Image (cartoon, rainbow, N blue to C red; front, top):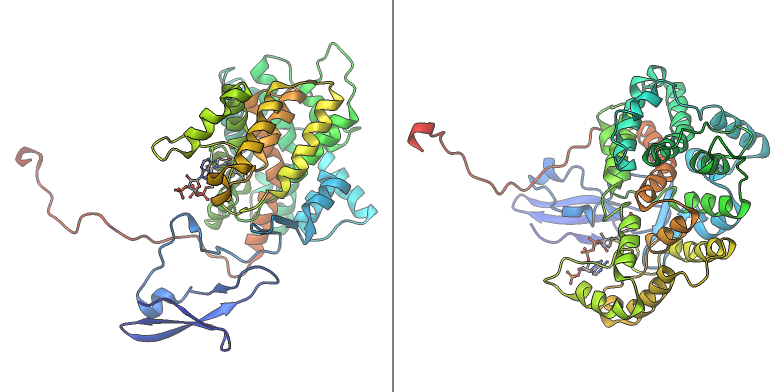
Length: 436
Ligand code: CMC
């Protein structure tokens, strides 16, 4: 088979095989690269495509999020991330991602009311937590508890009923902060704190994490705003690994809670959402600026598996636009908390400077990503490293739910079923044990 030829005039790509020339339509989105639609490639030519890691494959049509990795652009429903992080709030972003438009005041109030009034979890779920060891990782708890929601909310598991989908979407967004905060409280041996409907989404979350029954808790508006911004920055990111996992799980018709639990499991990996925890652990391990060259050397050594966590991205080959906002938020939080001369921040700033001027990182276009600064910020706010990815999961639930709904409403959706290039044995006869 020869290389496809893009015949722009005819808007088709031609592929030659032993059977002749085949034409495949070239389709354009509103922005971004065109795609060659190859859904009939196998039936017409007998060939599959081979693309490990899906580096050249668009798995779906989507109207939700757009990334231009070379230019460092991220848009939610067309709005640039920096404008949203500066001017909006997380619940408004959730509405935007779910519906496609910014809400009017009435729409926002109705949405906020609906989310606020779904924040409590079934009381029996509290007992579910006590089945975990105290030292369980919050992401392990989140996978289990979110999956278990399908055992508690039977009335919102029919994915073919739009009303049930709406209720499941709102339940997931509303209950995720409660579950994440409970995972945190459980790990430190403190009593669970119920959501507070007089507070906004993010402030209520902070209260569930940091209040104790013996003292009055006052929300710090600067920290609450910073947390909200962190949620906005993590809300969606196109067809990344965990979102694709949610879509693939859902393509079989699985219930929404099971699909989101699958997304959480995927997010946990250090190459994805687990990188914020890994980045902070790395900064702690480096410890002081004089040790940076040693770690940069390790990162460049082909025989050493070490990577600079918080650097590089599959799509961004430029500064991650979220990292810019995150860096600013990090400084705001440290100033507010009066953290002076934070050694981890000093190591981070020096590491960033060195990496950005090093030929290896320049040539490979490895820039700091969002996880580089989020860890320092969350640590200063009082979260242990093990909670970092759980906070990412909380925020990304909005994106997962939006993408899940979009997929179910897409009439072209079918069960996801990739094929393979088989390189195993050709047929051979079974040999009985006594003869082996
Ligand atoms: N440190 C050192 N070298 C690196 C790094 C790094 N952080 N990232 C990539 N490289 C090198 C890699 O060795 C390879 O070199 P070569 O071409 O000589 O073999 C080249 O850059 C391309 O790397 P790749 O692994 O083919 O790139 P990828 O697109 O498959 O991986 C990535 C992207 C994010 C998994 C990777 O950059 C990485 O492991 N980064 C560290 C983990 C991290 O910070 N992840 C968070 C991503 S942002 C949050 C999210 O969206 O989930």
